[in-house]
Length: 95
Image 1 (tube, one colour):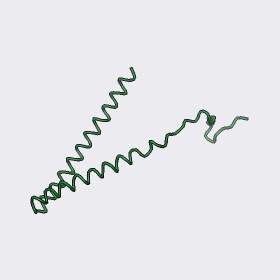
Image 2 (spheres, rainbow, N blue to C red):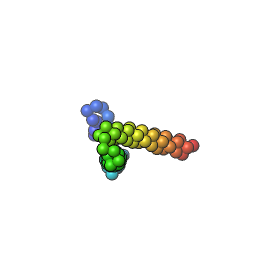
Image 3 (tube, one colour):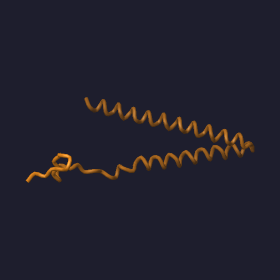
Image 4 (cartoon, rainbow, N blue to C red):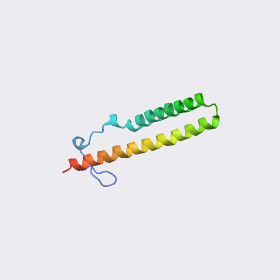
């Protein structure tokens, strides 16, 4: 007796079903949380340092904004380099 799914596809035997590695699923969330924590600590430290030297709220806000922009650029460039390097390694390894 052949079993058919409603969409006309035969189900795979249990042996042919690929194992799913659930341990790698949450890596993006871990990286996002650690990155956000690092960014908050860096910007807060920068703003406290500027506030300790100059008691001008505008200078603190400007330093915080510039710190956020610099951190974003740094993270984007680092991610680009990481992905591009991984791509190069995969291309060289496929030869």
